[in-house]
Image 1 (cartoon, rainbow, N blue to C red):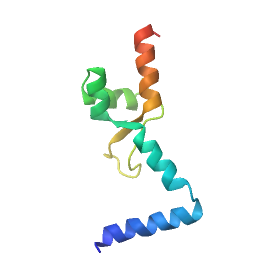
Image 2: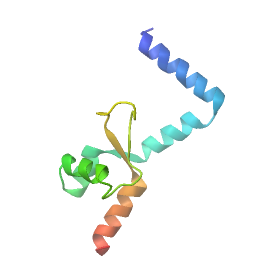
Image 3: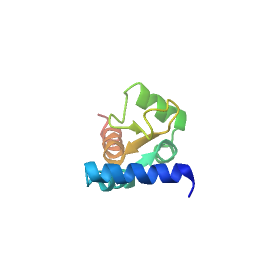
Image 4: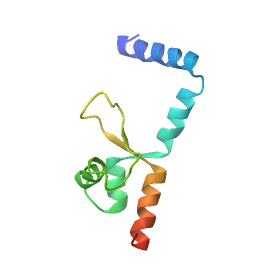
Length: 93
């Protein structure tokens, strides 16, 4: 087995032992989240604009980086944040 995959599997087993539902919670969260490119396409803006909105706290308050320890890790936007943004955009709020 590739060492990186083995390390990931060991980490999953450790996390599952410490908090049994953590992996399921994370996987469920990822299913209800969008990449910056997906958000940009849905809103008709550039990915750079979406990243700026996230960094400047203009929109998507619960957006997070896939790997917070890597500065260049891509952002992920939860579905609820995207829907809130779209609602505010429609109503002018």
